[in-house]
Image 1 (spheres, protein in one colour):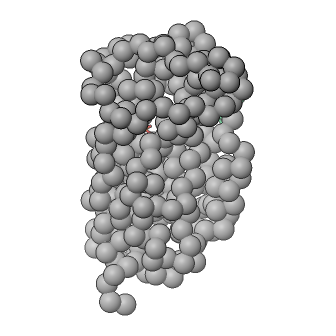
Image 2 (image 1 turned 90 degrees about the horizontal axis):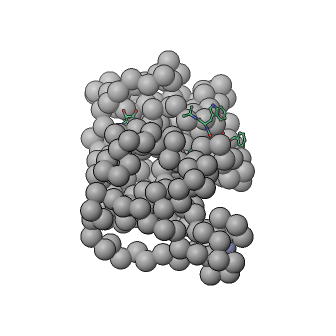
Length: 255
Ligand code: BV8
Ligand code: ZN
């Protein structure tokens, strides 16, 4: 671990532009199940990939809206952990840092990260499925819905069509401006740190490979192996809340 941190300290100290790329594993230690953890309760018989689609919402809006509301309210109930706080500290101490997340919770923002690129949207930005009008939802936690339940989506105040979650579903394009800014960061950075992603979902999973091709040094923090491991010069089999505070501490060590 020490040699890993020594090599990260050298690169971090000299880095002109650091990118941190996070997936669902970044939120795991805040109590938010990762995307591929078994779905529970009402949704246990579904695969996440089959629920997170426009077709699933068209077929059974209450099933899908209920799942997202359960996840949104769980995210409201969760707290950022010391790994989220460490990333906000690193952002304040390096020349330039871009935080790119696949996650749809707001834990990075609540920990103080200033510039967060949400490739897959946000649980906290529901909008009309027809006219796109933003829709305000209560942020008061009503208590654990019993194992989760079907919930009919609210109607848009402007056109009465069903409101949908503000996330990017499978088969939907990522927001072009966000993807363009993330690709530009991959082309420009000299250090890329991936935390907590299985590297299965595209085009997000393409970004670390793009950074490697542009000459960045790649570091991965994940307790498990992933299909993209070979792209990483440094692979640390550990967790976000364990390693990120140690990396942030490197920035406070005397030179
Ligand atoms: C699209 C929002 C174009 C919803 C999500 C090639 C090119 C382009 C597309 C494709 C392609 N091949 C296949 C596709 C289609 C598809 C895709 O990638 N499918 C996969 C399953 C093969 N991609 C798409 O559909 C994308 N759209 O390309 O559009 C287009 C458009 C129109 C017409 C034609 C084409 C859209 C993808 C976005 C989907 N939406 N999220 C929601 O959240 O409900 S993706 C979803 O998966 C989440 O965002 C999640 O973040 C993401 C990736 O999963 P991970 O974050 O990696 O989470 P996972 O659970 O898998 O892994 C967790 C990891 O953490 C593990 O490795 C674990 O070991 C680790 N871990 C656990 N604990 C810790 C930890 N690490 C550190 N610390 C810990 N404590
Ligand atoms: Zn509308």
